[in-house]
Length: 468
Image (tube, rainbow, N blue to C red; front, side, top):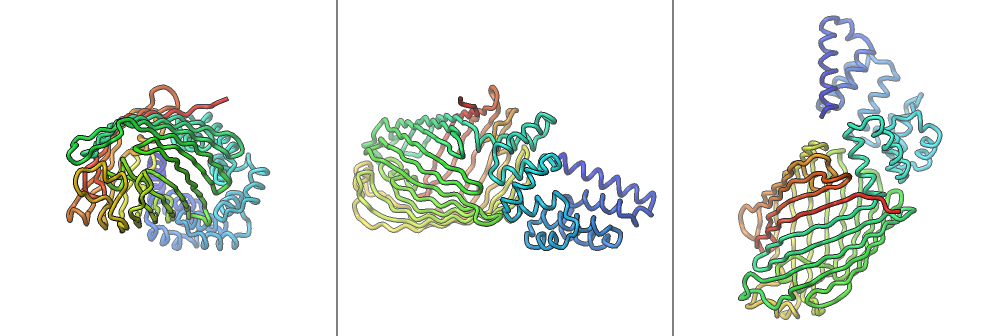
């Protein structure tokens, strides 16, 4: 916002100067400055008209530069590449932008090797990061922070780079009320970057379970726990993660899975997930006594830098923790996400529709039938939801912010199960305690697929550190 305010000031200054001296409107210098200042601040149609009307006053070089920048800003990949081909004198920043746009690894490496000190430092940081040269990107960004410790963009970039190649410790304790189930839990996770793109994560969870109404839910195991180890390998544009875990719940069993993250083309990111014996949260009984196998695909299309379209589909196979198969399900979600601000208070909104279709294949449900009194539905009904979400300051829930600030989100939606308007809300307060850490106090309220209420209060601490 500070950057855009500065551009508005430049725009107004230029307009005032042109009123005093109208001959400026006939010069390349005026229109080059004015177009560069207004490019991020006015509508696309307005800018297109300005560019076309000022073309006769611009030098060929400046017209090509501005046209190419405008195409890049609008993610018009093919148009920008066509303009790039037509430019006779290709500047260094153009060569780097085109190479990054089309994932030309060889050209990016050549430019970073031979022209590193001639490139814009922020461009070099992004190019190195996108090309998978995380160590180089961290070094360049660290130098940027040394030169300007108040640069919020460099600060946020350093956080993201640290998460990619840093060590991170998380601990969270929660009060989870899903009437009639009450859980108090502690979850610990530690992640270490090893070398050559490998990272190792270990997690432990402890649950204290009780029933608020033993006439509907009983036979719970009071103390339960889980342990998991994950090995992840990062490549230039892809990653693969394998994990194996042990669950000491109503029954003991192992769990394992694989996640593949890939960026097959520019602006498309995909996650493909295969899980065996994972936790399931569709209904209350299933939380304490069921498990599921899952195949899922989660694909995100970045339409603009601030706008994404996300498609999620998952196929689930449900069984009790004593291995009685009783059904399957299909779940799909489409969400359009818009980020209006990236710095605090970051503001975003989402429009979504989701749909669940479930098929019960057995009349008995193994150990699930022993934890409920009465004949309650185990699998959810078929459902759909249509709604939206508004987010304010949500980075405070995950980022290593230096100042304590609040965050919240609210999601109103129509539920086919309730036949009316439902809502979900979360809010909290987070900030730094010592250095490169974050403490968050938060709460959330939501509904499950049977329209039952879920209320959670949590305290979460995160720490970035370096192991030796």
